Image (cartoon, rainbow, N blue to C red; front, side):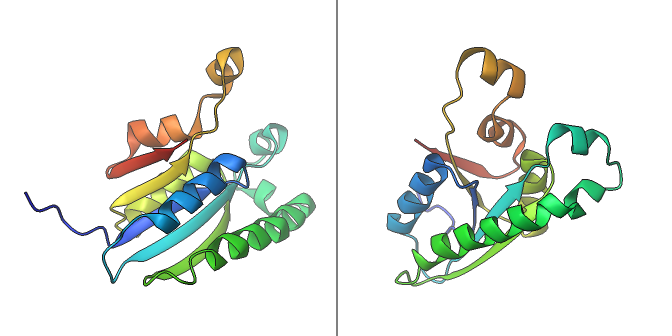
Length: 148
């Protein structure tokens, strides 16, 4: 049976070892050309600023500039890992609730596959915080690949 080519892929990274593993996995994944990989990093403001900000002012706070600079450096490094692949790559740093922002990007860009790393949260911490990859898996309208 023929499956449609995966030509629009979103790689969600957060700077963790798990997201680096997802990037490495995708870099070795045999994609047909031409494919487009969008690498996205979403910074979540600290909970107190998230609650204080209905108008997303937490995403323009002074500490956001540092997070954005560090995030864009990481994104550039990840994108450079794809320079020998035969598909186009772009990257974007965003601020907000990671699962929500990633899911919105997937819809906006008509993504066919979301690739994320498994964070490995366990026990009470996972129960209280939830898992970004789990939320994406539950709510995505496209296929999701979780890399361990």
